[in-house]
Image (cartoon, rainbow, N blue to C red; front, side, top):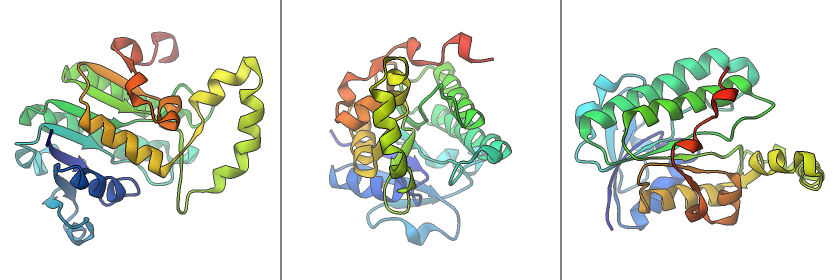
Length: 233
């Protein structure tokens, strides 16, 4: 089924690769860009100039999209970027939710992150809060939760593969290691495209195990996908 998609983060690491995949599936794609970045979008994608942190700058251009894909986030997340996570990551999803609501979007796809986690606490807590914000909007949403995406320029984490294998072999750390495992760029593009092709009925979270297995259809549905209350403090 052809969908009309509004996408933020279209010139980024994932967006620049996801857009051609969506166009190849026959979808119509429009992407939000800064004034000087419209020429960086893949051919066939319509540019919408605006500010990802300000819904008013683009909300009237979202319709008639039925699907909103939000990929905006702080580049190269690090523990010392907590203020930027609030200023960019959370502010942008808040603006996106407002714009999607005004346009009557039917399905929201949100690039979140695996959580809870023992590291990068400020990062994953902001993304978890983004999920809760979308849940309150009451339109069906898919939360895609990778931890680290391996690809061109993003391969240093390969050094941790032996540690992951060790942790997955120990019962006490197996679940955490699998939830925070590494995924590849092609796996992420396939998962995001699948989420667009198969809208959630309510809330759905696609975690690392499903991304790695290419089995997003096995993802968890329902309110229980949100961070448990015991982890919110």
